[in-house]
Image 1 (cartoon, rainbow, N blue to C red):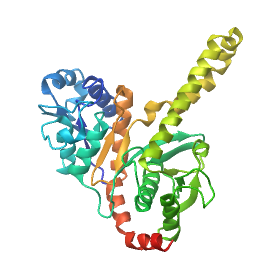
Image 2 (cartoon, rainbow, N blue to C red; image 1 turned 90 degrees about the vertical axis):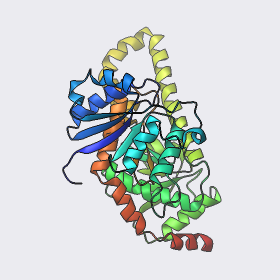
Image 3 (tube, rainbow, N blue to C red; image 1 turned 30 degrees about the horizontal axis):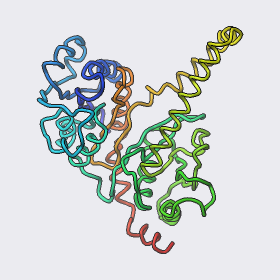
Image 4 (tube, helix red, strand yellow; image 1 turned 135 degrees about the vertical axis):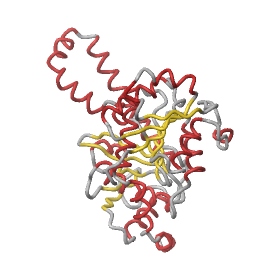
Length: 348
């Protein structure tokens, strides 16, 4: 996109430690992104004093008072049409064209519902998906859907594959990302019917995609694929299983070192390697799941994020804006003949 300022809309009241860590995260992001400006929505009585602590934000930040906020326990149905919350106002700024992306650490269900209602899905896309960028042994990969749609048909999975492939090209700089459907086996006859139908549809479409078939859960971290596609139920379980396994390994390692004198001595020699691993695997670096498939960029920071982690959500949003991610999805999806894909499905 042109060399101009990028405006990010911020829900200052979302998250467990808002608005403090939100403002601190903005300050960190502003230091590394001099072209970024912020529209901040929240309780001005709480947010304004925090902004005053960071003079560097004064020239790049506009605060707009929001009389209400979305709480973690609120149901999406109860807040979806409340236009007075900081979340709704922040998202609506993207719809109005005042900002290029919105970042919130608030209620995931509410953020998804309001984003979908306000920004609407891109033409030809039936459902948006939650996507995240994750580390594997040899780099990073895109994984979706992570919980937006617990049930998906074959057309939904195809749409996710197309959008994920675009994201991998734009966000990760991979020229021809390897796209795979998450399945219980690599053989063509394995898996649920919608997964097999989606594979057949992708193979027989005219879209130039580096589709490699199925990937099993144990191969995700081996870097077999650059884009891993699943329905929201399966993807969410896979993601939490990966996160849980990582936490278990860290705890087992700490316990082993704590209970062994020789291990403590050996740890001194291992520190450089451990710091390198920690730098790669630090979950804060990958904070910021995106809702893609909408006519606007909506980024979900983890509710318990610290300032550094929240700043990474902002930086991820800025990078995608710089890469013209939303216009690219619109243009490339518009070229796909989904009627043709559904015809392939029915012939399968």
